[in-house]
Image (cartoon, rainbow, N blue to C red; front, side):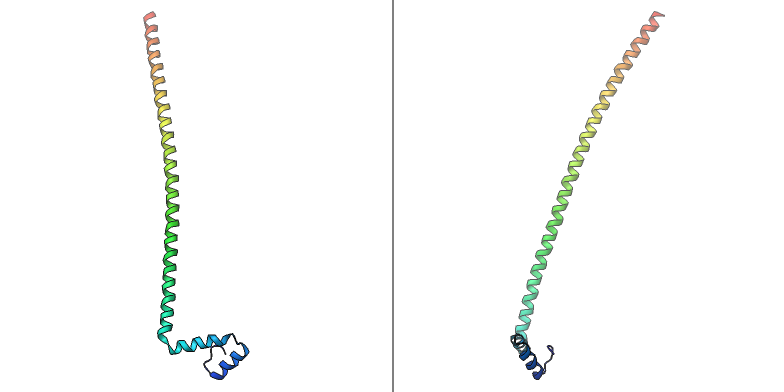
Length: 117
């Protein structure tokens, strides 16, 4: 009934539901003024495009923010790994020096033993 274009049915609907009266008037004006309807449609599409663009920009900003945060986390992890590597390198150098010192002491003691024999 609501979608009918029969004047009698429209009057029945408007009598039963007076709030539809203005809606029917607008629909019939649009039928007569296609240019106005197209302008409204174009405006709606423009608003939709603007909102879509804003949404896409916000999505890209959020994606970029997450990538930047992930990058900072990875950089921090790399920094910690470098510190650990440096610490291990220093321990290794210290152990090598201690080993060289012990090796030198062993050589000295062997030489002393040979000299006493």
